[in-house]
Length: 297
Image 1 (cartoon, one colour):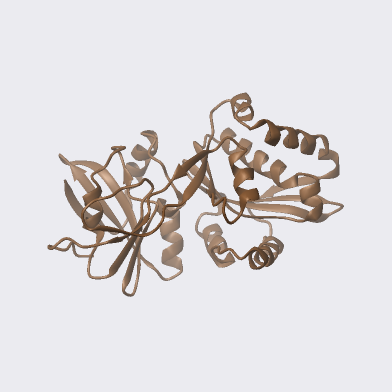
Image 2 (cartoon, one colour):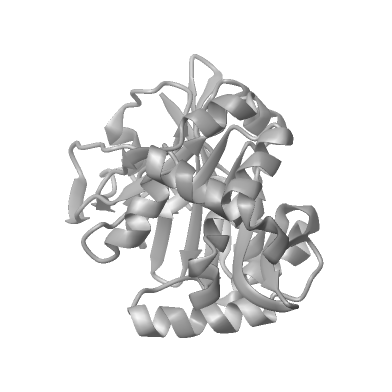
């Protein structure tokens, strides 16, 4: 298998990968790469070819002394050759978190695998609803019956400052980490139509909010917050369902609900799993040792 570096992703290749049903997590989409470039990171694409045809693609970000490959590479073959990950390693320390578990020579696990909730979106709304767990569906029904008490707004242009502030306080209280608000705002600047703010309001005041980032053919549940009233009204459930239906109507294949770490946040893990999402184990975070003959970055 041949390997080379490219400065930019080939749009036609990404379309072909999407058409073949290749997973498209946010961290491997060109919008993500464009955002990182705006934030001062160097980004390049590793391309593998087999018999002259594209076989795999990796978006790799680099800062001084460190190269990062997150949720990749993208492979047309569902069982790619694991040692090929070593092609991306150069003189910098290289860390990779592949989308699927892999092992092989030169791949040293350093962090245990995490799991991700991937909500697949069938073309039929009835099938999507039927996939909900009974308890989740019942609570959604209660929220829908209370729709008169909640105003749901969806916007690509609305000010998300209130949601950033509320989620930051929530993050501090619950002791978890997330990308800074600046990341989402740069995403909006790079791809305005791929940023959606969902708000639930009662008497004009926000009771819940959610930010969705779209990266065709997938989308990601980026951050969210719900206050006491929102939890009482199941507003977050209503927003997530509305987002899934909107994505489904627009032809998106999957909705990435993010990390599922039941040990640290069992309630959130149950909330995500209740959608009927696939709970997918990612590969462990790896230290990738270079080949003796290194590929030049």
